[in-house]
View 1 (tube, rainbow, N blue to C red):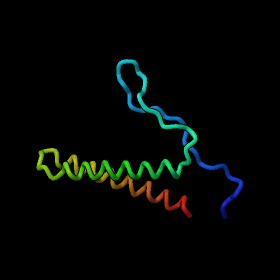
View 2 (view 1 turned 180 degrees about the horizontal axis):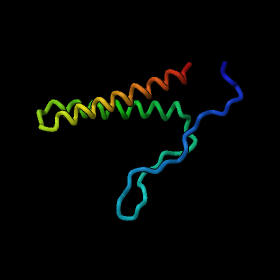
View 3 (view 1 turned 180 degrees about the vertical axis):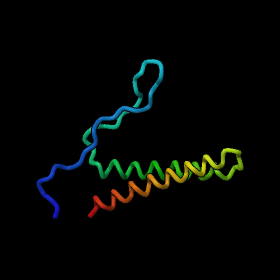
View 4 (view 1 turned 90 degrees about the vertical axis):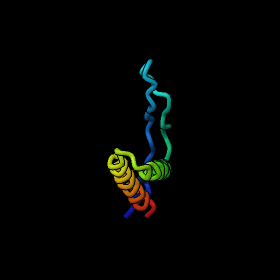
Length: 90
């Protein structure tokens, strides 16, 4: 049974994109975004990264195994995010 009085799950501020020289991040995830909305964006980002890696794996480079490993990790992460989203939707 779901508790109707439960607080919504929200993101916290998280900096990323280190610029190197001054130890300050270039980007930040904003606080207060509903987790479900954030997970939808993560799933889309993972899909784009997976498609990019898949296209790169067809080039026949010696590092093709590394690209395949990357694809597996991306697909696993996306499946996990999509599973969480489906659970939140219920």
